[in-house]
Amino acid sequence: MNIDGGTTKLAIIVLDGTAAPPWIVVLTGLAAVAAVVPRWTWRNSGHLDTIVHEGGHAFVAYLLGHWVFGVWLFSDTSGLTGTYGRPSRLVNFLVSAAGYTAPPVFGLGAAVLLNADHITATLILALVALVALFLVVRNRFGILIVTGTSFVIILALCSASAGTQSALACFLTWFLLLSGPRAVLDLHRARKKGSSSSDADMMAELTGIPGVFWVLGFGALAMVCLYHGTRLLLS
Image 1 (cartoon, one colour):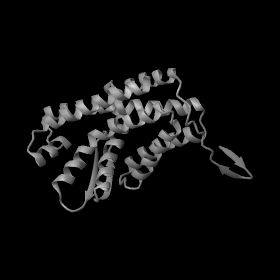
Image 2: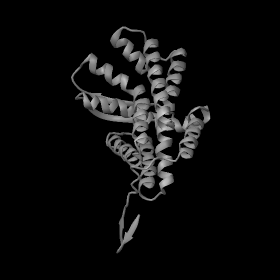
Image 3: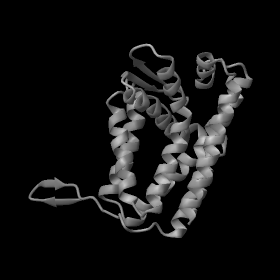
Image 4: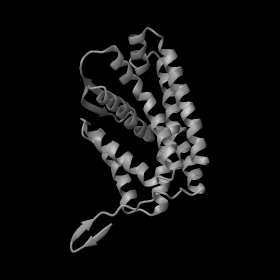
């Protein structure tokens, strides 16, 4: 950040073309495991997964021509995305499927970028996605979470050291890759307790295929993304 003549100028540290040091990749991976696996840390860190989950619903709905009239993010890590458009079973199915697939798929995409040494590009794309989501968030807690996450990324881009920028990009990537299987596990537990309002149950209603198969599908996709993402990050 440069200050010139009373005017504050934001200067982005561009690290594209520079690989993240291996020790940062490993340490951020361990930090992500610590954030995702224990229940007491997941109660707080799970908000990041919810942001991407609901963002996935909103993004796919928008791509398919539906109007996203609101996204709500709640303090218990649950969320809700409201869309409106011409009734279509296929569109409703794809929008429902986008939630649990978004974190692992976006995590794999980030791993591809980091493997190609695009550290700054990874953070900028994350920031653009958060800004787009901010435009449709409709509750105070959601605005707070999205704004806070965006602020951390802006700090890394504009005023942090190169090591901090690398660490944040790697941590976010690891987190999304690991949160995919964790979220599916929570979905399975919730359905065993009698919950019938999940994305998997919505997909079951639309297709006639039992929800357990969609849960297994979410889990399989998350594990495939985790496997390939890990290979990319550690290669």
